[in-house]
Structure formats: structure tokens, C-alpha cells
Length: 126
Image 1 (tube, rainbow, N blue to C red):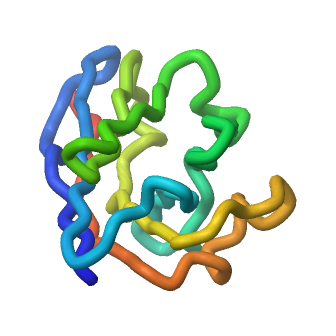
Image 2: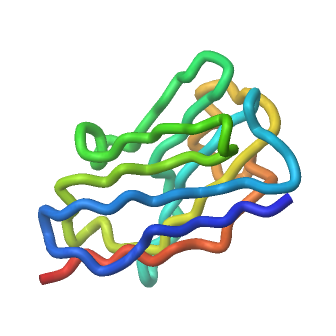
């Protein structure tokens, strides 16, 4: 199983980027997807997650209203649309997946996702 993340880059504050994460080797149509990020010198943190079976989507507070998590099951791909980007959003973004639907309390935990992408760097700077 491989997860391939892409879409990162350099963007000015207030700009937008769309990250993609494509899975190969198995489908996650009934599982859970997550996005996490790690800024330089900081620990990895939860960004957003979606539970496929009921489409329950959760976000960290600092990205609510700016980031949108979407999916395309036919392509086995998820997306993170990031708008109104801020310098503090600068980080390496990782996608993660699990083949099962998680309860809400575990969707934010990186330890519950067995599959991870390689990360894509997002830099927000003028």
C-alpha cells in the first residue's frame, strides 16, 4: 500500500493550495483519512480527518473555515483545499489512512493510522 501526497509549494499569505493524496494497493472507501503537519522544530499535529462511512469530517480549530477536506472514491484520492493561508501554516503535510472507520476520539491521533504518505512541503511566505 502506498500513499502519494502532492500539491505543496510556496505561496504568499492569503493564497491557496490544494493538496492531493492518492492511494494505491488497496481502497479506503470505508476507512478513515487524515492530514497531519509538522513544522520545523515542532511535533507533528493533526490538521483534518474524514471518516468515509458517514463522511464525518473534523478539523483543528486553527484551520476551520479555511481548509476543506474532500474525497474522490473513484480515484481513491483525497484532497485538502487550503485557503487564506497564513505563515503559521508552513509545514510538511502528511496524509494518512486506515482501512476502518474510527471513533471521533481517535481520528485526531497519528498513532491510529497505519498508512502514511511521504509528506509535501507547504511554505507560506511573502
